[in-house]
Length: 206
Image 1 (cartoon, rainbow, N blue to C red):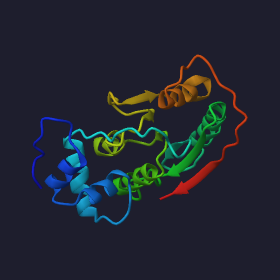
Image 2 (cartoon, rainbow, N blue to C red):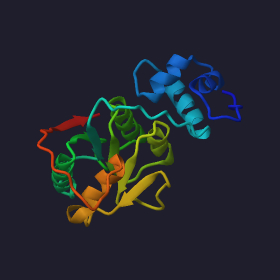
Image 3 (cartoon, rainbow, N blue to C red):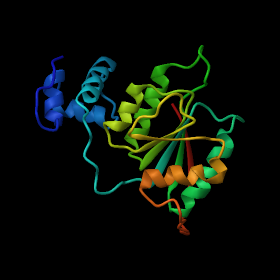
Image 4 (cartoon, rainbow, N blue to C red):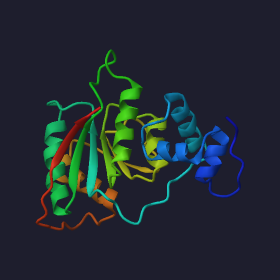
């Protein structure tokens, strides 16, 4: 693996050359596709992070949905959070996809589970991601940053990246859910739009 040498904004071809792979392979990694070994994926993602690569924003999103990523559905507030989030999302005509990254216990949880969960979310090309996780690493944040996917961290531990919005779960029903969704879609937080669109909570686990 070599260092990317370019004075301009890095391109997929620059990342591919530095990683020693084809541009198609880099594209698979960026879009969360299968068909790439773990070793190659890790190498490409490291280069994407180091080069501060940012995927060009698409003119349209194929899926009017926001990913809500939790460790697991328990009575620790995640169930009420899902209910409140879907209520606010409906006002914007947006669906919510709920993904479970795995139990929040050291003997079960691994970094790969969270990363794989985020890669699955990336493949669905959401409007944005809301993260209710015990912690999130800089490498995992980079998975979203390099794809230009806006994200919100609920009850963050430590300082929040400039690319993210950090909100508390305590006031989720009092306005933070709306604030999080508004941050993702770029809507003002002082007004709510009612749209009679149907939407579904899609539960997925990785």
